[in-house]
Length: 120
Image (tube, rainbow, N blue to C red):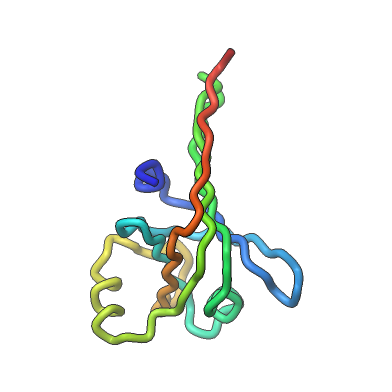
């Protein structure tokens, strides 16, 4: 899990109208939880409410042919508690996309897998 503290972008995998969907997101690692900030009423916010999702982040160097990938599976929850929202809003999690991003999703890591890649 500690590797997830370094990349600025990951990918969340969720179900949208009974089909798999993948969306790149910026995120923050808070202990064993992954925190995502999005727009209230967005497709991502609606699809992840009390859903099992996957999250993946990686870092690869094509020059040295080294890297790593971490995949997390867990339940996502929308944060509704005002005190928790205030705490999450204070995290160094600034959205890259324009517009208000006042909805927080927390993914509890229930399964974690990963791999490192290095030449021969």
